[in-house]
Length: 160
Image (cartoon, rainbow, N blue to C red; front, side, top):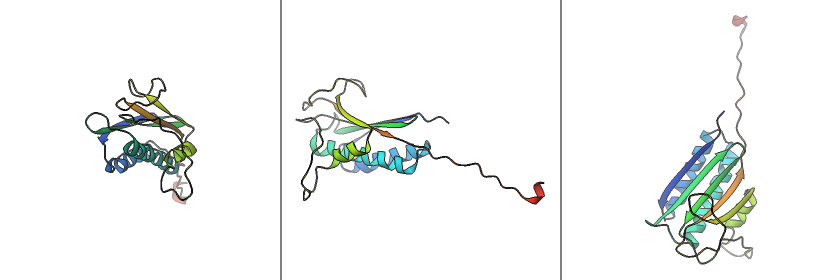
C-alpha cells in the first residue's frame, strides 16, 4: 500500500477557509486509508492553526493563507503559513472562564511535536521571532493509523 500523499491549498484569509481546509484534509487522509479518528484529529489541528492565523497574524500576499500536509508511513505533518504577527505563537493557560486561548493547547496535546518557522521554501527554515510582514509557518506532526479491511471469504456448499 502506498501511503505517501501531500496537498496544498492557498485559500482566502477568511473564516470560511477553515472548513474548506479541514474537509479537504480529512478527505485526502481517509482516501489514503487513514483511520477516521486520526484523520479527524488532523482536521481539528489544521482548523486550530488556521483559526490562530486568522485571529493573530496578517495574511500572505493576495489576502491569503497557505495550508499544506504531508502524509508519510506513521505520521502526517500539517502546516499553515501566514504573513506573521508581532509575536511567535505559543501555548497559553487561559482561565477556566476564558472564551478562547486554548487552540495551541489542543494542537500540543494531539501532536507528536509542533513548531513555528520563518519560511523560505515551504517547510524548513530557522525558528525565529515572528516579524509582522514576514512569512511564518506553524506546523504539527500527528501520528496516524490505517484502516485494514480484512478479506471477506464467502463459501457455500456449492463451491465444494
